[in-house]
Length: 239
Image (cartoon, rainbow, N blue to C red; front, side):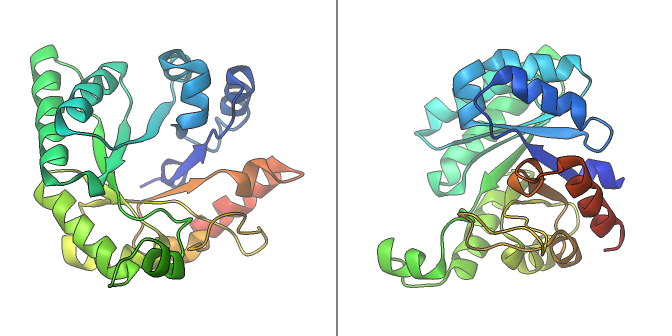
């Protein structure tokens, strides 16, 4: 896969005009841009259309988690938007994931539109092992839980998962090379972790088996964002 296709730049912004400026500024380095809750709540589906007008792909990061009927119906509308990939929470259960996948496949075949990749969020990278056990009440560890959710997503027919770099290698080993792994919480050694707990460098995440790296503040919060993405690109090329 070309290195620029591995990077997903997170547009974690609330100003759609600024977001489009970022898309234009980084178009040489990045193929796919992530539209999350903040930007989508401000700009709605129109921001997706405007990014597409620039011939760029969109990863719609809304993390759907609701009853199967609600999520599957919302996912159909997302497919009609033409995004290349979107996500839902694996913790919503097997039925939610399977019905969503089936509804999207059926719609795309019926309407002759490209089918987006559907990936399942496992455990957020902002959650530490201590929080997972002591606040959320799980008796087992994060890695065990992530492996279970990844297996359930695979059985439901989803294309892959969102998982931290720390869980990537075990998922890759179990589910093979065709199962997509998108890894957030990417922080080069020279970038602070911010509110992310389970972080990893770009080089290590790719070596562990990640397909795509989601990067936001590690680029956009730097004094020289173009220099930052250049350094990250070099790290990817050396992995």
